[in-house]
Amino acid sequence: MPIHDLDCLSVARRRKTLCTVYAVRACERETWVALAGEAAVSFAQSCGFVARAGQLVLVPGPGGKVQALFGLPEKKTTPRDPFIFGKLAQDLPAGDWTVQTPDDVARDDVILGFCLGAYRYSLKTEEQGEQPRLVVTATERKGLAAQMARAICFARDLINTPANLLGPSELAREAKTALRPLGAEVEVIKGTALDEAYPLLAHVGNGSQRGPRVVVARWHGTHAGKDAPLISLVGKGVCFDSGGYDIKPSSGMLRMKKDMGGAATVLALAYLVMAQDLPVRLELRLGCVENSVSGHAMRPLDVIRSRSGLTVEIGNTDAEGRLVLSDLLHEAGESAPDLLVDVATLTGAARVALGPDLPALFCNNDSTAMLFAEAAEHEADPLWRLPLWQGYAGWLKSTVADLNNIASRPMAGAVTAALFLEHFVKPDQRWVHIDSYAWNDSSRPGRPEGGDTPGIRALFRVIHSLCGTNRTQKS
Image (cartoon, rainbow, N blue to C red):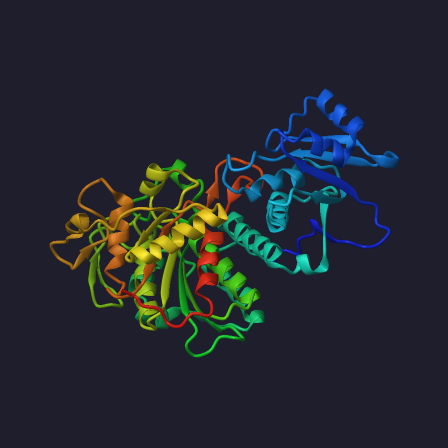
């Protein structure tokens, strides 16, 4: 699928008929009047407009043109929220619109929010009607906010695509198609080579007629020297998860096309890093598999020797995501990256603890965790740290293997999953594991129902913050 062209953005041209949205706050009525005129403000108030956050009203403008007033949150009462501008893309009538905001509102937030609000995924045959467009400069159309929107919409498309149309080979092909034009070296591994190099991942994929794939991509920014930070990204790409022999109930399978949301997130992040040509070195690994039921599928109590040499007993075939990630994490560590990040739709336990909007973050380095926390707060893209509590490590013991892939107790499932992964990460390696839902259960401004990439803006900010630094301490 192509990277989005962002048809919702229109480059400003002379003599073009433009309509204006004035973004205002409830406590500043004088500003409303100065911008739109007393008659327009009186009309808006007669329609019930009070500048509530996200409230939109169309009002008459000079020369019979339409203009609009749009409510913003009060200063310092709510976190930064670019998604609020997604409501403009949903509710404005068709046409070309400019948005005028107070000085304290970032222009990039307007562009990003509008683009994400304009996103639609549909396989319907009827054509979509004309939509409103945000007028931007040619520079803005190529800028970070627009590139971020393209990356997120690309990931949303991947997650939303039905599993019959996006299996392991298709996901690998999408990665190759997206990254090679940006200068990445992309290798797709399959067959015997995959079986030998990634035995745990291969064991997960054996049950499907659609064989597994591993994507390994490497890229150097054009301004990245030999000592530029090396960032390694790993993503869980389970294109559909039936649960295997420990099969999910039908209700549990309804959204399992999204189980490759971690791979979609890191792929979109890699695309963005490359498109922005950050001065870093980047490695990306995607484990693309399908967890199915068949005569070739993995069975409970199977024992497999991993790439690292550790043996793993399969306590539950529905705990497959950690198996997919383990060999990839071990291989990624062989390059001694400055930062190793994996993203996965890994556990329901993380959703029970934090709900759909808060990805759980696990980290083996306090200063690195703080870096992510600060980035998440700055971008209003929340991540919530949970502990790698070593007191639960013994719950993963097996009587016949080095590890069991599930804990012996039905508690702290997100923590024990992270502890499992930690066995495949070198002790001195700075590592972050993000357990994400990658889905919106209902539609909100800028966040339509369906696949999504919570945390991607915070992740990009962290990588950007490492630019220009020398190889950093990992302890």
